[in-house]
Image (cartoon, rainbow, N blue to C red):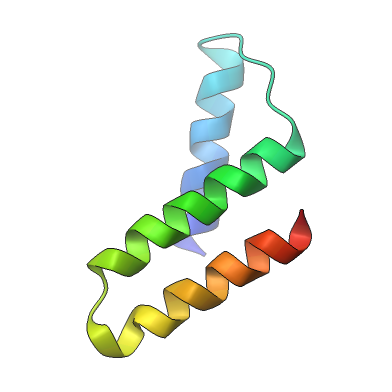
Length: 61
């Protein structure tokens, strides 16, 4: 949930503050990359959860 909010916030800032056009696919790709980065920082037993989120965002594209 927090990851989704973080990506939406970053997307909003890109559009509003920097006038960048960003498609939904780009936002999903960014979310997948954030999930991958976050999974590297998770404890070993929680790392599978990060991989699961990567798969969720990949399948949504």
